[in-house]
Image (cartoon, rainbow, N blue to C red; front, top):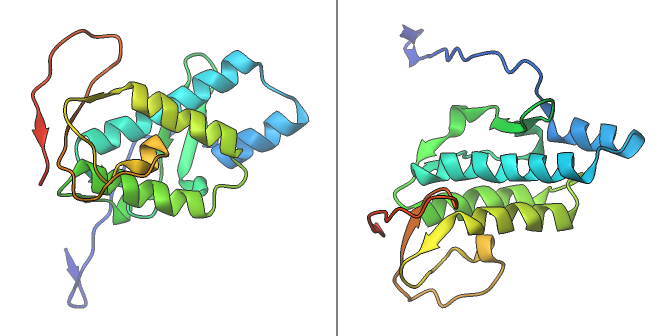
Length: 168
């Protein structure tokens, strides 16, 4: 709707009951450490939340630690807040690079080793069917920017073949 000549919108989402910010999770972990199994499950949930978002070429657009929420009671889950600046990216690798570069500028309180593990989990869910370019944020390596690539996302547990996802 337009209010005073400007477009306005209201997004109503389901309550994230039981979720806390990842910063609060690490603060609680510092006082009363969670088991390594719980921490591993939480990191995997964060990686899978990024995978879900990026696999549909969706870029958060304003990705900071305060926007990542986790739940570790029962099955670990993760989600994002403040998606008002999210947008559809033309290419998956651009969405990943944008969000991860932005997040990595202000990664505290996530330990660097935990963040590398999140990226490692994400990599295990990426099937590379060609050469990769500009996905170095995920792999942690430098690649030549002139190489073409095709990637497909799928759960690591499936043996299904997925269609090639061409750049652009």
